Image (cartoon, rainbow, N blue to C red; front, side):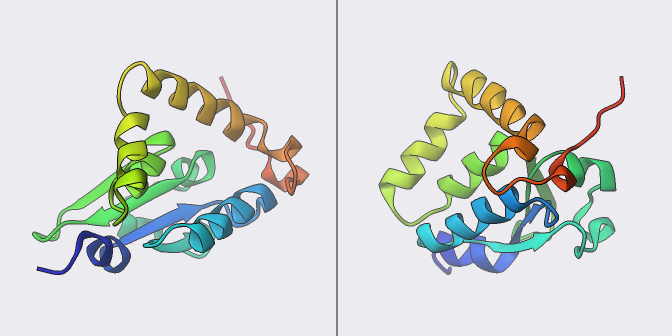
Length: 137
């Protein structure tokens, strides 16, 4: 069986907002920093139907879409995408951080922080008005 990092790289896709400079910069940083980054794809260029995502879901948050050995699709959005991405790194330190992000009370903080950053990403360095996600209701 191939190492977990190889499985993650070969069978998962990180879907992000390619029109958002902040999001694109964050994904590029992950690609440079993590030992085993997954494939990344702006949602604007991805086959969302194949990934099991609706356009609004993809616009609202980052997604890690992974296929297991049986061919089943698993989608993790927001802070869970980051957590799962870290959990599948070859380094114990990255894996520990990924588990920590999904453990209460850290998961509550991670979820809140992710939602705040996603909501105001157009104000962050690299962000542009195109990054703004207008939410109804």
